[in-house]
Image (cartoon, rainbow, N blue to C red; front, side):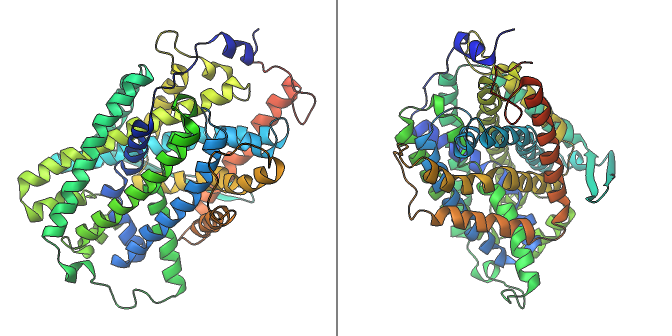
Length: 490
């Protein structure tokens, strides 16, 4: 049978069809999505008051530190797959890098669909403002699997009318992405204007109706540096980290970006700066209109999270609430669109190298995009739409922190040591401080939260099963660590 490299040579190549504007727009709609519109009650419930804004401030600083890492790597190693390519080069493409990059792809099989599913769940949550019956619970189940020496693995599944909407959005997005990248670039700009218009209206409404007494109504002891404060801050930063994620999405499209050595760092850092300013302004404006205690109750109940709709209803009335709800739904869809586009290229890149299942390397003969990877991603994301939003976000963030961001931040230093001569069109500022600060921030989020063991167990199980699968494939194909590297087989 053909090797994956032979398949790649005979396959159509990708198109460099996205410039700086399209790449920045794609990153921004990916970062914004539905996250800041629906997670504010969750952040408030973590810290118990408007001091939760500190979580977004620190989350922005963490995004900048890790963004500098991704900017350097994206400019030096521009290719489809992003972190997959980086990890392979950092730790050795024929030794540890092969294992670690495979583990990255393996965790993407879980974290990428989770990320897409949270956007779809959030979209359905806002649709519940129009049709409250969408939050009616038809069935729910809490499953527990006891693992010796590790503890229980817990998962909660829920079925509501909104679940069917979330699933439908997954499949509709796949349908829209089933086309050339040049057409997608034009569509991205249209979606960007919708996203910016929505946030601009929210900020304008908040600034013209700003109530400082509500915005800064801190509860007693809000900033007392106790264990409870730092535990709450860790929980708030976990949600904020989810809200900021997406700044690295442009790196996954390295083969489709014009002049990637310049445009990847520029698009990445520019999107972080703009989105951080928008988030802080928007959240402060909402706190100045809607009492935080009302949002706190929604966060604890994990429903009725459509705070922007309530915000507009208080200022302008029902018509504005209905209009902004539709705009938020458009924003959520734009994020799902961007996420599915970027993540569909990651298994494709690994499969081309023979380090993942070869079927994912197939490129559509006419439209020239990795269609098998896209279809598989959509199906798995639809399955994850049955999770609760809060649980899906926590599982997503912890899995990604352990199996991607920590090893990548540390690996950027390793790559500097191993390959000092590698051309780097962009170098992270104040090296190595951004990589070290990013690692410290990720560790703080992992272990300073209530019930942090729950999601860490998920990550540990995914890591262990990934190692086992890799070792079986490597033994079968005579690859590292069992022998010389041979062409990959099915």
